[in-house]
Length: 377
Image (cartoon, rainbow, N blue to C red; front, side, top):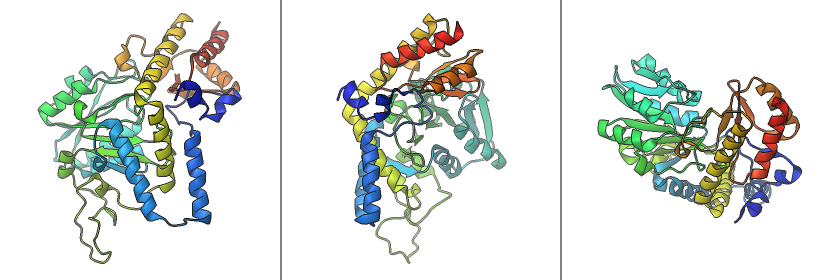
């Protein structure tokens, strides 16, 4: 599949709309929209209840996700959002008074509140101070203390778009027996990730952004050794070993990550995600990542050519992953003008944030640059 064919899967591109807001919410590609309509039709006309089919689709979708991050489907569980995934981790660890958690002050709140909530249990939280809206791997490593039990970071930071050197942090965490947790919602699949190579123990990721899924669905990755140490605070009828009679009440939890899927899941969102992932895989994950990086670098260079310096201007390409953020006194005027002209981006913390994807083309970036240039000169 080439770029032209991929763009055909997004009907809004034919209407002159430029969508540079994937860090906020991804559009549904046609295969997902068709799948949703088929699901609704079945539920209202034909296969009103087809649990075996759902199990098949869910299993296949987990396998697609697992292949994306180099793990097995048994290490994947579905939840409803990134926050609850991180709460799952925070509430399932056996904490001792004086244990420390290491975060940084440039994180999205979803990766902060579940952990500072543990202060009531005597857990200490250390916040690394960021610079230019991001914290580097060295900043994180230098802040580790002997009592540090968990580090939780965003693989790609929501505001600046900074992509951290995971392997460097992962090596230290393994050496010091520290749990490494990721918020990956701004990273997958736009940034490559091998959880084994990077030493990631836990990951939470909503599917409504770069994965082109529906809101209300997320997944977690839990490595096997970490799960053995976790004690779920919340369990349900789907947490226990399959084959139990309903009235046995045998609380023997599944060995797979599915133990954390306590009840009925978002069927519609899983069917939709299944089709979106197949579309992304058909285009090719390596090509997606190459296109995202090329668009990021091109956009940043063109901004600098008109006198605007992006937040990550001094970073190398290994720290880039699709988000371009700029500060400008006229940010609100720029945002409102672009919006009126059907160019969609975001305002975050008084800055403009652009997030083009693999199917966006340079002509779209060029138009945005021209519009901004007209407004600032």
